[in-house]
Amino acid sequence: MSKSFVYRSDIDGLRAVAVLLVVFYHAGFTTIKGGFIGVDVFFVLSGFLITLILDREIRSGEFSFKKFYLRRIRRLLPALLFVLVVTSVFCFYYLVPGDLIAYGNSLRYALLSLSNVYFWLNTGSYFSKNVDELPLLHTWSLSVEEQFYFVWPVFLLAMSRFFSRTTTWVLFILGFFVAFGIADWAAVNKASAAYYFLPTRAYELMLGAGLALAWDDFPVLNKP
Image 1 (spheres, rainbow, N blue to C red):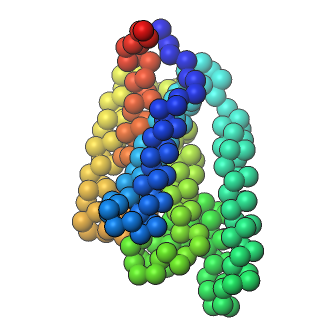
Image 2 (cartoon, helix red, strand yellow):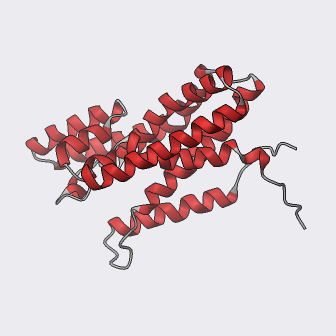
């Protein structure tokens, strides 16, 4: 029996834990040294939720690129614009001219879903000195997710149309190990790029996606 997708309090709980880890880390709590792992949790959850929705719509013949992207826009854009407007007002009054110009550049990249590219080019590393002074630094992860939204629906739709479910799984597993290998190599040889870019974050998104693709095959536990 197919398990219907309903509100999951456990997923919201994981999101809350991930948010707290990131907040505590950036707030300087010395006991939270690896708080940035919250971002990794977010990528896995995002891959799971998006793939669960896409896979079911594609298999039922209800998928539409227009509907998918309109949903993403309605979900993400209002909050993003609110943050950008409030931050821009603050920066206009408090930043010196040189920093304001740099902020304007980061704002443009954020609107284009390319924050990760901008901050890689201009900071070198997420852990560089004074990066906490960049008002839109946190938007790099949103840009990675938005880039994922452009690629992943195309892949899933192509797999469903041209390959069997078994072949799709084989290609997916091979792709996961390739993505993991790229991330592992880049973490040693291109550490700054590895943190910021989709190809080196793909294995995290794919880990969640794999769980979603297998979701209907998991046994349904009877509730007491």
